[in-house]
Image (cartoon, rainbow, N blue to C red; front, side):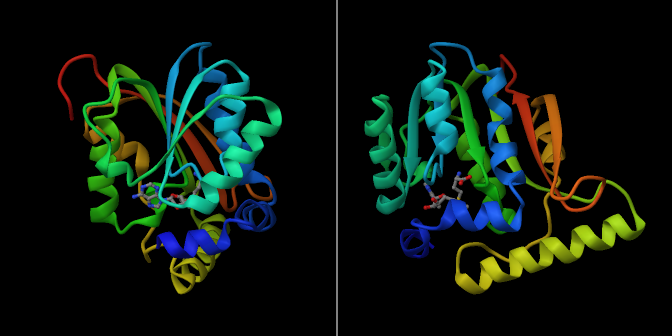
Length: 219
Ligand SMILES: C[S@@+](CC[C@H](N)C(=O)[O-])C[C@H]1O[C@@H](n2cnc3c(N)ncnc32)[C@H](O)[C@@H]1O
């Protein structure tokens, strides 16, 4: 999977902007309103990192991890152009030293790469990086908001995007996970969820959510 991301790094954000009509980029900015100046924020699978750059611009202390050197090279170049300071780590997120003590961990369009069981394991690896009481922020594909036409349109859109991604080798084939349930099942509290429709209304959409890790006990 890593090598595919290496090859698509130069056009990854642009392709996402086209097939989501900008909804992916909007959803990735959702968490920025919840960051504080000086917060320690970890971006996992950061890609080209427009979100991580925006957080650094807003005064967060950013660490960004990705397996793909070409993705990180582009992020580093953008940071240098703007005079921003981010810590960039080329590594597998699940291999980071733990427990981490980040105030916020951001996983935008990260869990959707994996099969359900791998994504659940990866979620566990992300949670140990969040300090007790800290936040986990996710943006990803949203399930249909209703039945009927909206449900059919969401399923058709998602199957197409997921199927093409699978053929390219950048993600596993799977259904849209119920991420809020995954988080609450592990004892997190959902503080905010927002939908970002592709074309307005209740059709295909992305969503972004903020969850709080409990102060005691790790899920
Ligand atoms: C679907 S892209 C999303 C990138 C970015 N978060 C965004 O929203 O544009 C997933 C990214 O995760 C990286 N990645 C995949 N597996 C990883 C892992 N185990 N550890 C760290 N990064 C990983 C890939 O190289 C890729 O850049």
